[in-house]
View 1: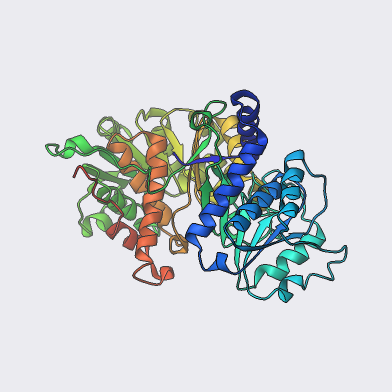
View 2: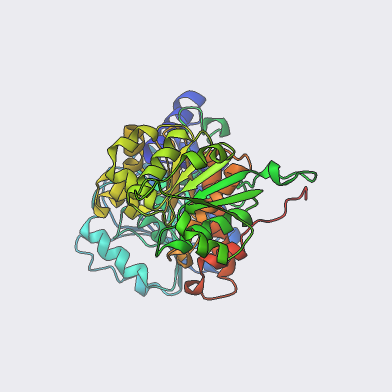
Length: 510
């Protein structure tokens, strides 16, 4: 399982491994440094055959760097230690630094004004620069001197490697515009939350986990960690050779307003492509001309207004609605009285997985009476950042400072299940958290959210649990965009391309 930890969770693991399980801190440090050395020597033979510079300070992350230096030296590599920050050494770090000196590994110390920074340029053949200055405990602003150093090495041709997390990056929030910019991050034991958020996603480069000896069963012994969905653990709904359409769910997709008729069309097509047995497109009766003029595999249901009012005649719909196995509401729904009545009816009466997206989220933000339904276990909200700001009353600058905290606070307040969509997508229900980082900016176009809602609803109709349906649909949509980017320039990817090329690989059993 690919777990993602916050800095405080990682500290809990370290402390329990040392104090309860009985692995000393110096052994964990030794495992970390040697694991990093082995990975670099095995996977980057050319870069480790040149000059390797390790930037360090005095903390435990630097201690990992000292062990790494020892092992690179043992492997006959040319390694130099360059001190770029002063602090107080832990016993383990000091011990390993003394061992480096005993091995006569060259050590340099930048002076206070960094006017000997050209030492990096004056060492011929530098092929790798390793950041071992700060670890996941870093908070606040990077010292000005380190900003200068990190900026000076950013454009060098050498491979830039961060140990555990790029120095200057907040391990919980991903904030760190001035952090070390790595091509490769060797993160210790497991992924860290900050690697996938804000600046972290772009400062970390390729991220690889390095085992350090923490027992596997400790990962979820003290808390419920976030889980990263990747190619190793993503899921598709179960399929059966002798099944029929009724076994794969009746999905009701509700939306469609003049000027926004295409949104729900994409939703139902995505639901069908993702394997739903029957899909009903439910819209205003006056939209029948459009949907019936564009026949497809879905079934159209028109809901008329009562007389000359803007109130939908839901009595005509309620019996049919009871047959739903999952519901999607919001794409192109509108935000008028008709839409509000439809949404209230769905939230109040639905007992099956219900995906609430787009216009439905705007209605919830305006109508506080709808909030009572958000804690129902079958309701899922799927906002992007802008919609989440509308729901919470936060501005975007506030949100991005600590996305997980903002999400958890909203869930605690409302009891809702939320899939928060962005370049890193997070699902949380207050008890568990799933993370997806697949995709590219080919998805940054109108209609992508409508497609995702359709895939989620389809997976739910096929009996996949709501949270798993949400994050696996997000992963598969992102993976589709990545696959398409192998064939075309990704800004040209359309939501309809995602539907037509949906990443649904055959399983070994198939």
